[in-house]
Structures are given as C-alpha cells and as structure tokens.
Length: 371
Image (cartoon, rainbow, N blue to C red; front, side, top):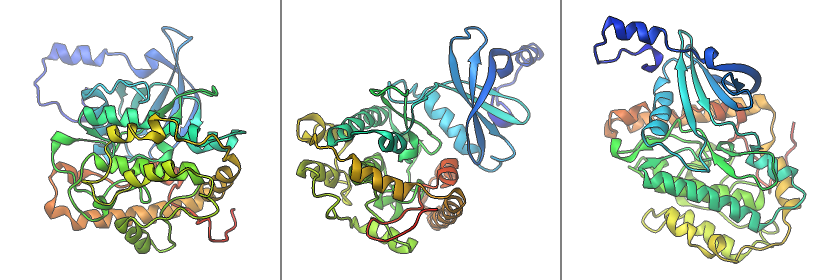
C-alpha cells in the first residue's frame, strides 16, 4: 500500500480493494509496550509479536500531520532499505511497514544497547583499540552500503547504536532518512548535520560516497579525544573551518594518541575528494587492520570531554539545532538551479538533530558551564 495515502498508478479491481481493506493492521500483529524514545515527528515503541510473544521489535510511529511537507524523507528511507535489501549485521533492519489514516508504522529490528557516546562514558576502560574496533564495524557496514550504491549522507554518533547491553555488543547504523541511491541523480543538496558534513557539501558541489568517509573521520576524531575537530561560536566561521579542513591534534588531549590514529583521521578528512580514502582503503589502514592502535586506557580524558561537549540542556539543543537547520536549508535553496529535481526534496532537518542537539558543542579550550 502506498504510504501517506498516495494513489497507486496501477488500477485495482474492486476485489483487490476489498482484499486490501482486510489486510492486517499493526495492532493485529503486535502488542505495543513501553515508549523507547521520542522525536520531533515520531515515537518509538517496544512491541511484542502476537504470533511469538518471545520476540520483541521496535516500532517507529510517525505522525502524518507532524511530518507534513517532509514525507519524501520517510519515503526515501523505506525505499533505500527495501530496494537494496540492506541486510548487514551492522545495519538496523526495516522488517515491515503499516499505515492508517493518521500514522505510519515502521517495524524495525530492536536494538537495546544505547547510543555510542553514552556507552563510552559508562565504561571503566576505553582504549584506541576499542575505538578502532568500533570504526572497523562502521566502515564495513558503510562499505557494504557503498557497494550497493547507497550513500547515507547523515552519519553521526546519534545514528550509531549498540545492538545489546552486552559488553561485546556490535554497533549498528540507523536512520536512512537522508540516504540516496547514487543512480537516482546528481547529489548536490546541502543536507546532513553541521559539524559532520563534508566540505564539498558546504561548497555546493556535486558529491558522492566520499561524504560518508569524511563523517566517519569526524566521528573517529571525537572517539579519541571527546570533542569535535571543528568548532566556533559563529556558524560562518565553523563552515569556513570545514571548507578548509582546518583541525588540530591539540595538546594535552592528543599527546597519548598514536601517530597511526592521527594518520588514519587525516586520510579520511582530506578536503581533496580524490585524495580522500575510500571505505576499503580505510579498512586496510594499519590502525584498523593491524596492531597500530594503542592499548593505553584513555577513558578518563575522553569521557570527561564527551560529558562536557555532548551533554547539554534539551531546550538549548533544540534552539541551536533549529537555527542551524535554517542556515542549511537556505544554503540548499541557493543551489536549487543546479540540482536534480529529486534531490531538491532533501531536507536538512532530522528529528535526531532537534531531539539530541548534536550541534550544541563546546571547545575543550573554552571554559564553559553545563546546565
């Protein structure tokens, strides 16, 4: 059934219509349980299978009214996950979709281990090797996506979730709302999350898979020090830093980090797209595939910076995220004449941005107080 009540171009007989009306609803197959999380446009509920009560799922419930005007983001997410059958151990699976008059329901694989940064803060010990193992899993999943012709376009810590609370849990990539299939047209829209977005996106140039690699480089940087590579109170200055690729390995935060780790990050965060590593090249780097990653415990400094830079009051997160979204949307409008029609629909706003406020950051060099 087409989502959001869109008419199917295929003519259906009255018999087909009656069969469609009798199709089971989400309530017929699942018992809704606790609320797992909420966003600007949706709510995620724990759900129990009525057929097998021992099996649990996560159901993302989207309010159609709240999502009005942004339907294409959801349609695109479903299209990507369905069309390419992105079945990878480190990608959250979309299992089924349902729709009624007011809501859309996405039945997803249940992941219960929490967000990436939260787990690191909670750990008693954390090393470069731990960070390298996390990035290896992310790279393998993104490399698989790229082989399938899919570009995620919004890789960030909030979209990296642990599968379970187990100590050795794998990491999972979620949220394909801004993903794009490479063969669907030129990508030129300024979308994504400020701070993790690649220079070529801000430069309003056509771009491709390399934007995901840049984002992985930014995440790797944060995993090793606890603060972002680019920061400025002024958004224009922030974008200028990213465009130039200006970042440092500041002392004392990077004093105990290996040269191999720093080289790995430099290779992923090359402004020159032609020189930037691919996922396959990154997977072959000694810091990922060899024994170059240090075993020294860096938990103290990293967790301190993560708490300082990524734990802000929710209302400040929301206000800053909205302001940044407006800037990104205006930037996208400036390039509308050079975009393909489908890509004009790409929206910079994501519910995780408003809910988690990943853009409200502080610099380790600036003295700030958390709320």
